[in-house]
Length: 299
Ligand SMILES: Nc1nc2c(ncn2[C@@H]2O[C@H](COP(=O)(O)OP(=O)(O)OP(=O)(O)O)[C@@H](O)[C@H]2O)c(=O)[nH]1
Ligand SMILES: [Mg+2]
Image (cartoon, rainbow, N blue to C red; front, side, top):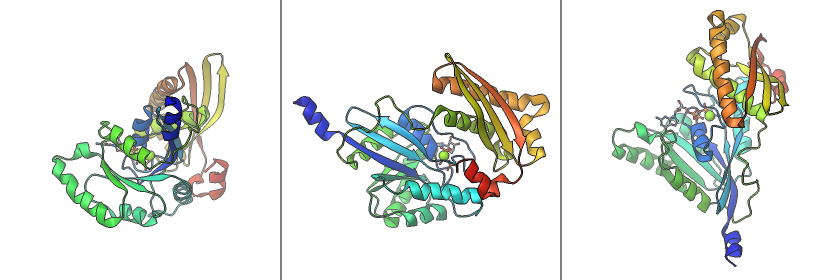
């Protein structure tokens, strides 16, 4: 009887996380799931794909979709593809989490708000509250949000410090339909390890090259083999100019070596086993503006 009651109140649904670049969407996804699934960097436009993270508790299961930061400023083929990923992810979800940064609403935030459909509940999440010197500084943005759109809820958090996260989860659950879990209780994503491996290499490139990382650099996994408990991974970093290749490799290969070491450690943590990682760098011209090569790379 108790079990039956539990099943009747179990909630299950899909929630998409959207927002302008760099507001902390991926940091939030990782915090919600409890592991680093989606890559994070100080630079805008880190996330390029839709990343699914599965949250499972006894009373609810939430499939959170992290998306690339939506932006209308630069119209390259890569940006158009990333924006398409966001608009597609907004369809067929049970709720939307719009992330903004504590401070003021920017024009970019407002452009995204204008795209929201009134058909599903939208929760506004005000992130990075740890950066505010005084909690009262939250009030102006909450006021602005209330006037900008009929948000179902407005929830202040710090994804980085983990503040407000349990509250956010319980608030999201209220908006999900009653239903059975869709994924296994242990599943955390639908993405294969090969994809996650490429993402980890990309994160280390972002982190070690910072603003110098050439826009359009990408990573392909040429080989991903299991040999007993060992995973053997061959990754290729694709850049568009010979000068960029030199930057990634660094003096006497030092930069690439540190990227590879840090990527390997993260892979070992995420996959739970030893990893042998080799990274190569290859020059391929102009791919970020070439719709055909984007398709080949799976965008
Ligand atoms: N102080 C502070 N920084 C944060 C917080 N959440 C995220 N950040 C930082 O903000 C930067 C961007 O975080 P991401 O999670 O990559 O942001 P994003 O919205 O996924 O960015 P894109 O994928 O480029 O759209 C990183 O340097 C994070 O460490 C927070 O709660 N407080
Ligand atoms: Mg991101």
